[in-house]
Length: 476
Image 1 (cartoon, one colour):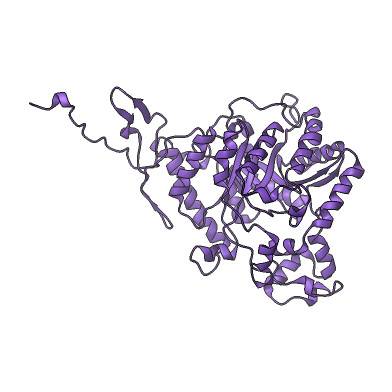
Image 2 (cartoon, one colour):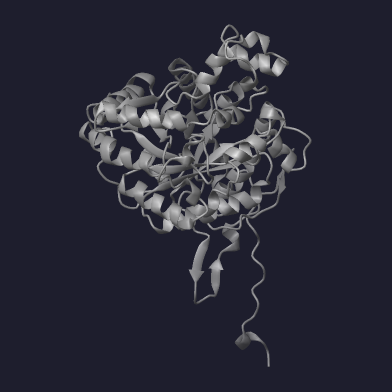
């Protein structure tokens, strides 16, 4: 660790979704929980002010394109639980949140699988303008069977095929964001009546396996051009994709060793793609339950555990069978009815019982990157995650809106600042990319997406049309 740089500082995001029940199912019922306000714009502006006052880097907005309908053979359980249905578009709350803040960043989830890239490129560029460079894109390829059927397909596209689509999707976007307009294309010459110079703008002429896009991009160059690029993966194909594209990887696993392995693999993939190992930051979902005393923190956790919905968690996992229909002492090996369920339980352990399985689905403290205790206990554990596991930040899991964020701001943040793990204040006017990397607003030249800069590898700029004569030039 460099003495000049000091200890690694935590990237701090709040994990959110524009819905009732995101990932802590059943807890929307807690007293004073604001989750039912998610349709109200004031929910989002109140939250944005809270997070900015607390020094959060960003709010990370999850999304899905379908309902969870595998468990019990339908979406009924998800609908009863409010499990990501109803849910609203995450992009549409960003302008409202940006309008009441100056520094808070926004990570927006959007899938490359079902909607064409041209319109999405326009929406993200618009948000980059409106937020003055505070947006990031969480690149996902979608995985729910219902999502595929919602877009006219009979079933899911195979995992690796979705990444093939994503590769080309990104290629189109890089052409639009990085290459279609020169930085000086907007001249705004009032005297000449010229707003933008056609000689500095070009079509992209993309003709690929999945997409045909002529261009040009409809939005003038934004502060970041390409939004901060985020993705969530741990698969071999996803690691290769992340190594080429991602600046932030949202990852996880059954244990810390799996996360360490993913970090190493993505760093290797980044170097293989011509980047630096440190060009990727690693963020995990962090569970933090904090109190002024250990007893207070554990009492909060006990309340959350009592209110957790087992059904909601089983539906979220798209479990291919219903363990609640078996006695608790039934060995899992006796419940298998398909290769699909066999694959799932190999990960959990075939020698365990139905009761043990259900207990894990109700245990909010299970898995890595969870801590409960006083601010000192929590800060100790976060420091260990940063230094020993090698992560760079957390997406803070919400048990209660807004108490989870308030508790972190009031109790944990001061302790992390005392230890030099959380910055004291925002730098005025910084973009989201510059905040995380300190190397400017734009993608570094070594990134795969910059190969179209200045129109490289693209058709020539648009030929200016003949200038129409002015009135005094027209012969009498």
